[in-house]
Amino acid sequence: MQNNPSGNQPLVEITHLYAGYNGETVLDDISLNLEDGDFIGLIGPNGGGKTTLLKVILGLLPPKKGLVRLMGQSPQQGRSQVGYVPQFAVFDTDFPIIVHDVVRMGRLSVKHLFKPYSKEDDTIVDEQLEKVDMLKHKDRSLRELSGGQRQRVYIARALATEPKILLLDEPTISVDFEARTHIYDLLKEINQQGVTILLVSHDLNVISTYVKTIGCLNRQLHYHGEKEVTPEMLQIGYNCPVDLIAHGLPHRVLANHERGHQ
Amino acid sequence: MSVILNYGFMRNALMAGVLVSLACGMIGTLVVLKRMVFISGGVAHAAYGGVGLAFYFGVNPVLGAISFSLIASFLMGYVQRQTHQRQDTLIGVMWAIGMAIGIIFTDLTPGYKADLMSYLFGSILAVTRTDLWLMLGVNVLIITMVVLFYKELQATAFDETFARVRNLPVDLLYVILVAMIGLAVVILMRLVGLIMIIALLTVPAAIGSLFLKHMKHIMWLATGLSLVFTTGGLILSFFLNLTSGATIILLSGITYLIAMVIHKFCRNCPD
View 1: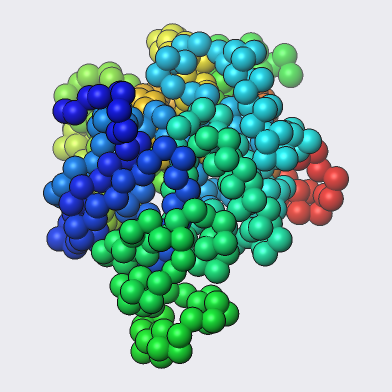
View 2: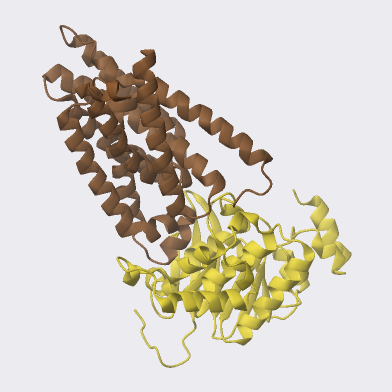
């Protein structure tokens, strides 16, 4: 237990983490620190452990080995200050609920048990909806929205928890190009307002122009706070998606990709 | 119409219809939204094991049904929570084992057992005063739980992972919900029978969720629809001399089909 709220303690501290399911190791010796104000994008192929990493950070999956601390606390304690935007496909897209009620879930906590939502909760919800430009849709049914709009609602829900850190899992999956740009612009703005962001995606093309630093995760993590994708990174995550080709990266990568199994 | 009310058993049955409707509307909505229809079917069928056992030992079958249905809901609920494998197979097996236990013990019980059919298919003659009190009690319990935990139940139905990250007591809420399903099964048993409970639990809520976008409103509409189905079904079964459970279920099934057609062709539906 290291508990020093003062000083330069990282918001998220991961040291020599191993994690996986049953006998299979998905994360192999990962170390990563998330400092206040960071905006890190981790890219990697499907099955490379991106979602697993987020699960471990959120205390949803216990590590096999290694240490994870959120603001000096265990993930279970620290996660109340983390806004989580889960992967889109996980949701039941047919669930009958209005936008406002989804975002209001961000206000739930143990403290709110047996208490109705307050006026203050509603104010916060409206503010976050305004921020993601969805306030005018607050009474609409979630199932009427486009993929991009829905994603913005989930971001608003995560923001309604008033988090220090925002964790996003593939925020632009099944979202069209324009909506994608919109979402990344929004994340950049949120980061500038002081929220630390960690996002994982296989969408290298877009994220490299928005995040502050980028890393590659494929079982192992390659992250040294670089701003650009390096060939070394791609060696680790060599079967990163085809988007790479458009990025004008060395031909070697493409060759590797063809040999890869996708 | 007033003919019907002259019969004590009809009065009890209609009263039971009113009482189960509330439970049905609330729990049914959660079952549909949380996609627990299969578990509910399993619990309902497994409850027959309790009926058979109670019959064999000469205890009130409702007591047997309550204990079996609660045990089945916890077991199946636990199995469904296990992320690894074959949850549906295991639930299906428990579903059948419960029924088998009921049938075997019925076989072993000497004497007249036609009454047991009423547990499977429902009977308007079956509802007793005691049953009505039981229904009232279960209703109070269910309404209290839903009112107390409404926003948390909605949140876990919508996105359990997010609720867990918010440190809500997700597992406790799940246990509570599963127990409420078990109790709802027992009070629905007399009216529609164990085999068809799954329909009365899900159809009203399914119709509601086609057209409405607030869980609260779906619960109210589902309650209203259950009331229409049970009352309408009972009256029809009385005049046509049909099995009450089957009549109620057919009525709701047909309504569901019509609702789906309307929903498909209606471009300006309220949602």
